[in-house]
Structures are given as C-alpha cells and as structure tokens.
Image (cartoon, rainbow, N blue to C red; front, side, top):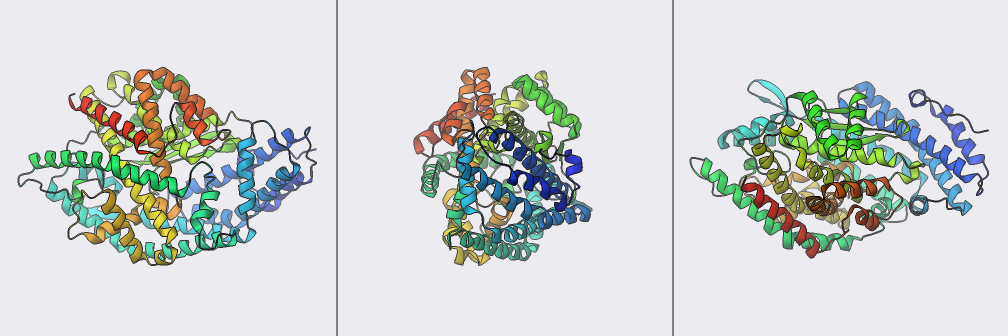
Length: 577
C-alpha cells in the first residue's frame, strides 16, 4: 500500500529522514501499463509538496531580506532537503524512462525528462546549492540599498514617484546620489559574480560541456525549438526594426522635455529616464492610479472580472488567501515575480509597488502568470505543468494588453479616460523600448559564455555591456558618466540569478503583441484562445502553444516589423486623445 501523504503544512516541517520513505516506496513499486497512472499521481503529489516547501522558504527570504530565521531555514533547505530531493527525483525519472511507458499527455514532459536525466550529475548538487546561496547574498546586497533624502532613509524604489515628479536639476542630484550608493556595492557584486561564474562553468564541465556553459544551459532550459543562432537573428531584427522605432520615441521625449525646461534639452541624459534600466522616459505628470495596496487590488479585481469572470475569481482567491504582497518596503527583496505553491494549487504574487502606473502594469503581468498557474493545476501530473518560459511570458505580457480596455474608472479600473490614454500610450512606448534593452541583456549573456575567461574579470564585463548598450540604445548621453553606464549589468538581476533567462521576454512580447492584435478585432475570441493555450501547460511544443494563442513563434524582421507597426499605429491613435 502507498504511504499516505501529509498536509503541506505538516510536510514542510519534516526532516529528510521522514521524507525518504516516500521516495523509497515509489522506487520499489513495479511499473506497468496498469500501475503507471497511480504511480505518476503519487510521484506528482510528492513533487508538489517538495516544490511548495522550497517556494515558501524562498518567498520568506525575499519578503524580508533581514529575516535571519528565514535565511537560516532556506540554507537548511538547500543543505538538507534540496540535494536529496534532486537525487531522488533523478532516480525516479530514470525509472520511468527505463520502463518505456508513455502515458497519455506525457510525450513532451518525457522529452524534458530525458534531457534532465542526461544532464544530472550528483557532484553538481552542492554547486547548485552554493549558487542558490550566492543568490540570497545578491538579494541582501540589493535589498539593503537605501539613501537619505530630505532627512529620511528610503529605498531606491520608493524614490521612484518623487524622481518622476521632480525638475531636471533635482532629478540629476537624486540620480547621482543613487549612482553613488550603487557604486558602493560594485566590489561586493563583482566578487559574487566571480564566484557564481566559476560555479556555473564547473557544473557545465561536470555534465560534459567543458568551457561551454551556454550549451549546457540551453539543454537545461529545454530550449528544443530554437538555437543561439536564432537569438542572433532576433538581435539583428531588433537592430533593424525596433531600434529606429525606439529612436523616434526618444526624440519625441527629448522634444517634450525641451519644451518644459528653461534651458532646453539638447540630449537625453540618464536622469531623463527611469531609475533602473535607464531606458524608459520619465514624466513629470506621473499618474497616481491607486492609494495603497487595498485600492490597487480592489481595482485589479474589477479589471480582471471584465477580462474574464473566471480570471477575476482566480484573483479574488489569491487575495482572500493573503497570497499577494505587492507594496515596497525597506528590507524587501528586489523586483516582482509569481511563484506557485503547487501542493495547495495556489500561486503567490510578489511586488514592490510605490503608487505609479508602472505598478499597475506589473500587477497585470504577474497576475497573468498566476492565471497560467491556475489553468495548469487542472492537468493531472505536475510534470505536465511546466510550460516553456518563452510561453510563460506570453501569459503575463498578453494580460497587460488584454486588460487595457477595462482600465478606466467607469469600469472599476484605475484611470480617467485621459489618464487611461496616457497610461496606455506610455505602456506601448515602453514595449517598443524594451526590445532593444532585451537585446542588450541577451547579447551580453551570449558574450559572457562565449568568452568565459574574459568574463571572469568584471572590467571586461563592464566593457562588453557598454558595447551592447551602444549598439542597441545609442540615444542616451552618458558623457562623463561612463562608469554608471557600465554598471548596467549589475542592475539586471537575471544575469546574476537566472542565467540566459531574458530572451523569453522579447520573444513573448512579440507573441503577446500578436494576441493583442487579435483582441483589437475580437476581444472575447482572443481571451478564449489565450486561456486554451494556458491550459495546455507543458503538454505541447512551443510553436503549438503560440499557435493555440493565435500567434506565431518567430525571430524574423518581418514578424517583428508587423508588431512594431501595430504598436506605433495605436500610439498615434492614443496621442490624439
């Protein structure tokens, strides 16, 4: 008889000695066509419990990066649970593969399992644990970055609204102060980088890819449907199509600033753009679309119920269970994300909102991920619930656009009609500006792992980042601020915590723009196709997921050109409002 599983709450307290019997039971069972479904269901449940345990511990460390107890629990998990679970999971993967059985709906997951088994090396487990621990340290460094402004200590994120609304001289003073604070951590992050790069290269070598972490990581990310050369094709398409479109936006923004400044604006300086990526324009008339987290979520619920009643119900379920933590505060980890508490069949959304229109877009984005999780929970096995990242981001980026018809206050949303036009205009401008920035990040990572010996020296990374920046974003004047420009790779946390995970955003934005184009012709039909695609989870290959959603999985200049043309056309329409 199989051993009955405990509740997630109880499971999360058990030491590995109490978990091992569940693995032993699965390992000892005979696998036949008659028993494989029940066996898979039990393996799936165990996997859900293990992943939820890890997710809850990770969330605790980013909700409060100063929480020593949470950090100790995470380190204990990494040392005493994670390596054992990985080793046991590999044994069960081999057991299923060696059985020769292919249960219905498991064709694509089995393809990924074969790669997982091929790459698994027990000697990599402590290296992966160490890499996770360095990620905790990176979060702590960034989470502790505060400055004093007007006599008060504040996080850099919390300065965002004030920065947006300040005059140019004040913005420059604020920008220089923040740059000085970030420069103070330069050596510490460089030191972490040297360690993490060494760990990654060693993992690749252990798995049979000496000196080629990119090839190892490509297989590890299950990138079956495209190659590094396809990424270069996409970079070239962006340079040809999106960079000129971005130049038109930057010039328009420069002219707006020139009209509002006493001395004019001959070139765009970094303080004329956002505090973080330093790619998006600032607006002195920044919209304040909500007042506190409750107001943000109330309006979000109203929007989602109009996009689709089932999606609205999903959002309300999360909110009612306290699974949305979205306001910025001191000590909180950086960024925003959605994770899954799989055993409970519930997502969790994390953010750092400070009261800006960008926060609304972030909530829409992360909620798209959450809705994806809810849809895949209907699949019977956890192995089927892992869509490729390139489609995960279609789920989130499409939601930003599918929600746009419902953002007005008269529909329960966030904006007056004029504010809605402005917010949507800025969002679409940011979408166009994102493709060049994405290309900087992705091309930089290709350089790192094609030149790993050189990349071990952070100064070479500084130079490589600046080279890619000048290729794709030549519109920002960093004269006299070259050190700040080269620091950009420090600000992009994916480089440090999720290697090669960034082109997904660029590809998905191309897919999401196509979904949005469909919605402009038939909103209900586009939402229905979107949900059908989400529900496939990881049971279909990447091109089929895109097709089901009504889009084409593509890298070429023609497809990108159509998306850019649609975006610019709607920007023009919104400008008339």
